[in-house]
Length: 506
Ligand code: NOJ
Image (cartoon, rainbow, N blue to C red; front, top):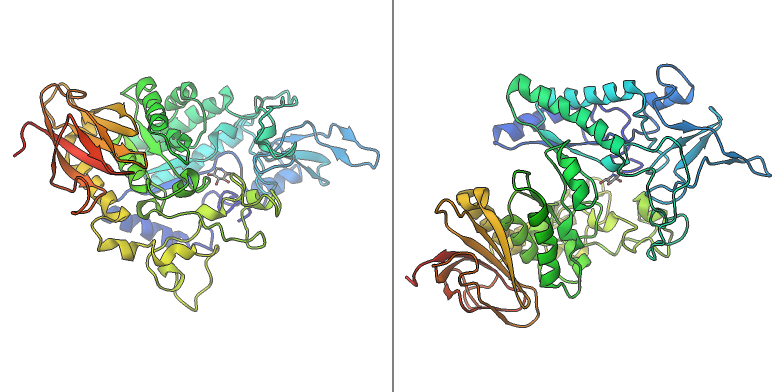
């Protein structure tokens, strides 16, 4: 738990904190019996320093001697302290190198020192990790999210990395201070991922069940295309680039269009606007007014919509965690003055799910052990229980949109087009060849009422729109069931509606 699950001491077992392998097996069986798929996190870049491989590697015990990236010191300083091989700095600050007396060498860790990087130049490591994938897939797991894949491969010359001149870097110990040309997103990474992908295909061929592999990789669109060749899809974090306040409709349009325009339609699109490493949406954009807008946009767009727990109820960051309570190494390493700055501590977005307004938001019962992070104090209003009975709640709008997209083939087979009218962004789903219905999700990003004209923007004849989902209740603007004239649709501040185009007012 040096990086809360991302430091693995046995790739084939369950940490006792979470239960046993029997518990896991029954979780998997019960998910499958309900028609749910279960996808795990696969962490190929590093193990824990408590992994048996590392302990043996430290002792130069074959065949583990080169299972990790070991390097001699660049020299020794005046006090006899070893000097790291180069200037590489880890994602969570400070040197990427950790000295071990036992071997009189440094080992590489792109994340915390408790996460030594595996050495994929050693073919045994690749074989071992392919076997790990096979182990879980053969157990019946439906796929993997592959962690931090851009970090798998490093340049073998171990040269210093150039400075980035990024003004957001805290100091020279900060990851952002350097341009990671020798440690991130190298071609070798994709060679390894291609090897992993073959295991997915092999197991699928054996039992006939499709398996999913998605990659956590923060790269340009050009590079996303390369990662599509070695996975089902790399995560698309474009919606995370939309910031505020104020959030601009044109920014959302630009981010969405770049993906729609540049990723071929035979690739699987996907949309992520939050995860356990980034501030929650309301804190990132400066308010909760657009929570429904983001949920409805991501569920309206083509492909896979990915939700981080709590997004469906509009959970916010817990910014009341003190430095003393902070557990995330990324936060601790930023120190007491900066730990709560973005992107330092990730604790604020990792607090317990808010189920109800009772003890610890219903996450655990009174008298049992405390959750690992304090519950956000807004749990008395932002919780599942409070939202369940309210048709206008974040939760119910989210559910309505899922129902619609599951029901209507346009959402599975249709293309997507966008249009901007002032602060209103319209995202249409349509299938031109076949006569499926056309659906348009319209978001007013502005704080004033705005009007849009989408007549003939997406379909030549239909003049009206039937409102199927609306963030306004019965007394507000455009409630459910309203028929709107496509030449002039007025949306209240921050309102989102989903309309089906229709020929008549009836
Ligand atoms: C990315 C994960 O999402 C993050 O939580 C973790 O700290 C690093 N990879 C290291 O595994």
